[in-house]
Every structure is written in structure tokens, then in C-alpha cells.
Image (cartoon, rainbow, N blue to C red; front, side):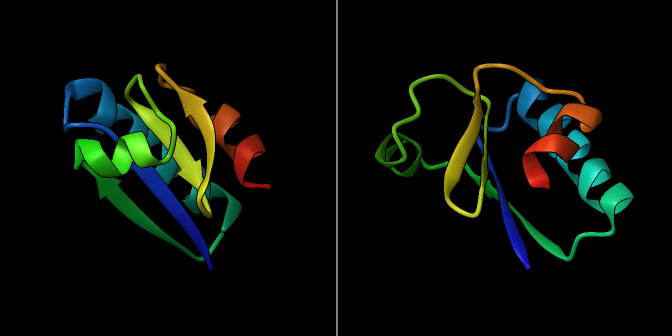
Length: 77
């Protein structure tokens, strides 16, 4: 099971990133857990200084932008 983390304070871009990540995982049929990380200390521990950010299985894949569902599919495979 993949752990998909949305790192951000809950802004509209963070919500859109979560929506795109969910759509990408569902399209690929991947068993996953979507986690929203809103604690700034946790976000900074992962080395992220700009939000929103996307991490897959603890590895940061995208920072400071909202990739499309198709782009996220590439990050998940």
C-alpha cells in the first residue's frame, strides 16, 4: 500500500493537490492511504519550505505546485 502525503496548511491549492492525488491513485487502481500533513514542524522535517507538497512513501515528489492527476500517476508508478 502506498502512503500519499499532502503537505500543506489546508489552502485551496492543497485541497486541489489532494483531489488530483486521489484521482491518480484511483485511476491506477493503487491501494493507498491519503494523509494530509498540516503541522508546519512535520512539513519542515521533510525538508519542504513551500507548500503544497506531495510525498509518496515518505519521499517528496513535488513542492510548491499542483501537478495534474496525470503527472501524479507518473510519480506513483
